[in-house]
Length: 104
Image 1 (tube, rainbow, N blue to C red):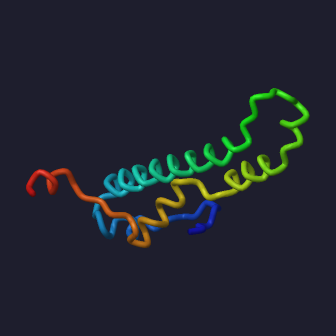
Image 2 (cartoon, helix red, strand yellow):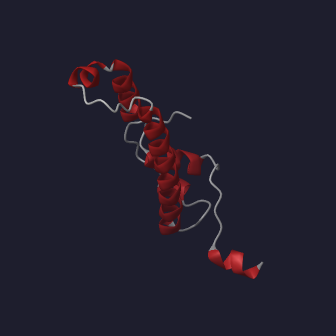
């Protein structure tokens, strides 16, 4: 999923249509953003781990173009908060309140 990485003004009414509470919406989006951030960090770490070298040769470090391209790709990606907000607005984020969990 590719979201617009630019800053976009959001309609508050659209954000609260499901929760009817802006604070609840922000909490849901922030939790999802943390999940996305964690996943992206794990992916980047695993890809960069392939380039880990036991030899500290400065020439190898500076010449590793593929590693630099991978890092730049992740830098250009939309931020996790933008992705989480898009998912929330598209109805792709599932959430439930703690009261609902204890009643079942």
